[in-house]
Length: 353
Image (tube, rainbow, N blue to C red; front, side, top):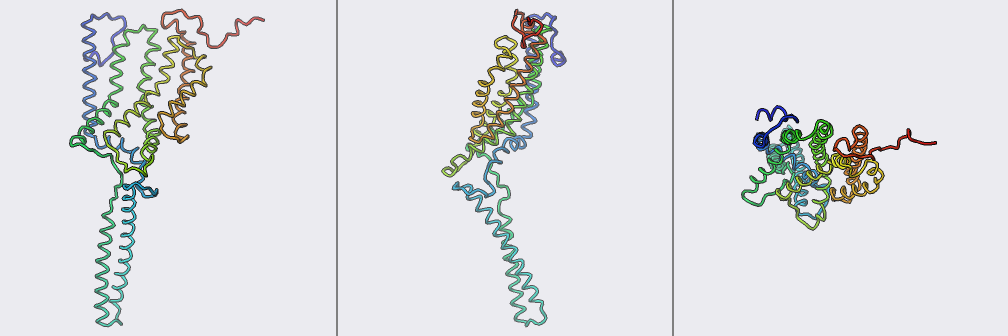
């Protein structure tokens, strides 16, 4: 296990089947231990993890009463807000009344009966002020509507599930390193120059896709879906369904960000050339638009454009990177195949007059 932590097996090392299985077992143990440690941390901090994943949902809710809706839950929230504002205004009014009656009761020119009446009125105003302030302070200050649970064990099982996926995301770099360290010895030294960067790109691009989906795409998608036709529904979001949707949604965006890896693989295999990909840019743009429309279920063109831009940039950068790699190392030299058509730009050295 210590060897598995230090370095991969060298290409020229010859291991028996049992030794290969032992190395695989050691690396699997490391992956499991890393996942267990990360899970312990995420379960310990499960409230923070749930707050993070709930944030896109809460940002899309109409909890401030600015939007009039027939949704009874939103009407109740608006009523609570207006009630709090009314009681706060009443408290200020009674405070002014109390101060006024107190001054009148202290007026030397007032008779004893008037002083008693002013004092009683001040006491009544003070009681009304206190009641109004208590009523205003009793209005809920936290108006965020969290996902609801329906089963007895659902809060626990849902928390465990979310903590596990968060732990998997944290442990992903180490897990992928162990996978790379196990398969890299099968590559020739020349092949590693291309294979290692490709393998290292996978977690980086996946994490970039998850972050982009969380901060840009997911809030807009949740806003559209949650508020769609909300006048006809009392919208309650079940925790289990929302977390499943968010996890699948973010994982899908992370997979979409693997476009550069896919482009490099098909160009290195000789299936297509970078020039062919570039010449069919219109078809690729159509596919990217369709993917962005599916990934962002909203008619808002701004959201769809935000989803398309990184995919278009990644695809164009992938073509440039594949062209550069093919210039440095033609596909035939990497995969052991002869490929005479590896030239990306016609050479001017062979031009005839």
